[in-house]
Amino acid sequence: MKEYESELYKNGINLIAGVDEVGRGPLVGPVVCAAVILPKDFFDERINDSKKLTEKKRELLYDVIYENAISVGIGMCTNEEIDEINILEATKKAMKEAINNLSVKPEHVLIDAVKLDIDIPSTSIIKGDAKSESIAAASIIAKVTRDRMLIELDKLHPEYDFKHNKGYGTKKHIEAIYKYGVLKEHRKTFAPISEIIKV
Image 1 (cartoon, helix red, strand yellow):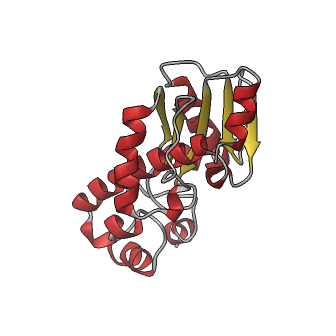
Image 2 (cartoon, rainbow, N blue to C red; image 1 turned 45 degrees about the vertical axis):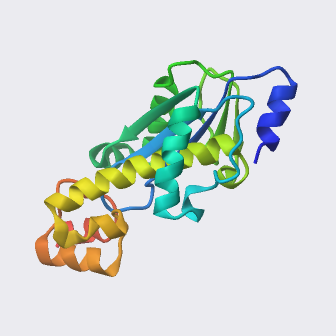
């Protein structure tokens, strides 16, 4: 998990930010990105791709990362922005915002899958959240941040079951859309919502 970081450290680059997003696929809510700069000597074998961790482990590691990181930046794009500029562009915008929200400017950025047009040297890594500790840490921060937002939304609209589906198009969520309607937080350009609106 430190292979990419170790290579950069060898070349005298010490401030490495891992960047990842959560929420490209859901039907509701924002896409959330995180950028995390970990100390050179930091390693926690529990840090992994957030999708491979239980909710309890993610919550625990969220605190560990915040306590140890040199800096953490968050960026997000609302469902309205996603509908306006599309999910890929919204993801890139949120990633840049996360990097800009770091209190320290990184010397190199490791990004999960996406290529960014930024003024910092960067490496795009396919499945980076399973290959880089920095990206995995960012995936945990982004996931917990977004999940907490959906749990809050669930309190306002419990019939959509957001606390369990986190905005993804589960059977219960889709049934609720047909029964109770489309919320302002729904992404109007995503199917089946785009079809429902047309009817």
